Length: 352
Ligand code: NAD
Ligand code: TYD
Image 1: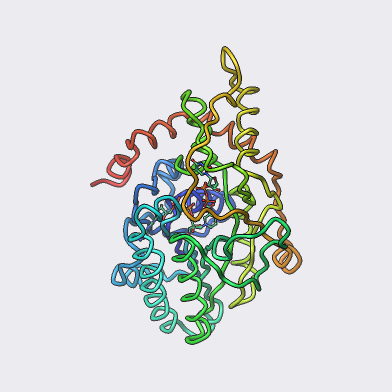
Image 2: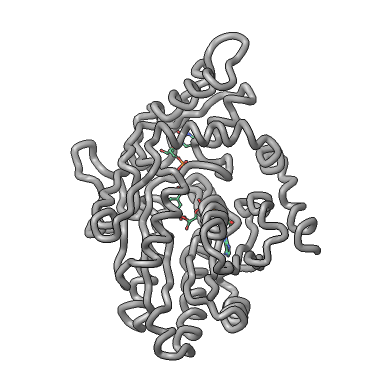
């Protein structure tokens, strides 16, 4: 048995691959394009592990995907591959359309052909799990209930619109062709191996470097934060026991305003790596707001909890402490990411 993971050199994908192989002996074929967000340094510990087969390539490359499916005969696919940063989607949306929409379409088509070629029992047990985001539901008012799976899709950014489109394609491939799909819509993740363009790692690294900690607008935008390993556990749970064709919201019941998140990080750094003079909070700097900035996300994860028995292990307080400690203790990873040196890891690890 084998599973195919796409985007497994990114933040969540790498955590998923590492956690999976720590718990199973089932091999993983990891297809990743290695965009700026893909980092083989995160998978360094699997260097000599035959259970991890890394392939550099694009989910939109139907010929390559078809060849990998025929060669490795995976029993399931977990699709993490995507362009994932809202600010980049605002500056330059093209890659988001190419990968998140057209890439997912091509992946689904290659998978459909492969799935049809399987024997009946394998066809029945096959799963395509699509990893998506709560951002597809749009923005909540302060008094609104958290997003349920039945909420209308109202994406507001090029990123969330492209993810919404991919979710719709996945849904249609189930309803029209019978492909056994599952979709998860998760809130904001944080934890080890997070590329420092996103709020939490950016603030940790800027704080340590003595740089400003940029807060968009008034900093009162709310996100629901989930420790990445809890997300990975939820994906394993849905993959094993989720009902085909269903979507599951994944969240940590941790709604926090951005300013509160940043102040929490500053307080942890004041404790763990104090400055000679003053507090890291002095580096907080309010900057121009993001265009179309969603005000509030919140996830109602009761379906996943009640149907499949998943629960997050970390609270925000325990998870953010682990995360800050991870960045303090993994300065090599940080250095390679921030200098771009990690790109050389591909040649070093797998040859030219
Ligand atoms: P990431 O940007 O850190 O990683 C994305 C990975 O996909 C990278 O390794 C990149 O090289 C790879 N990739 C990009 N385009 C590709 C292509 N065309 N073909 C193959 N590989 C490609 O993203 P992440 O934060 O790890 O997110 C993973 C998935 O989870 C995404 O689908 C994202 O929408 C979703 N998600 C993320 C969050 C979050 O908070 N980060 C929350 C909910 C859902
Ligand atoms: P981000 O980590 O980019 O995730 P997303 O936009 O997918 O939620 O941003 C999290 C929140 O932090 C979001 O409300 C935007 C805000 N933010 C800042 O205030 N300053 C920053 O420098 C960044 C990157 C984000």
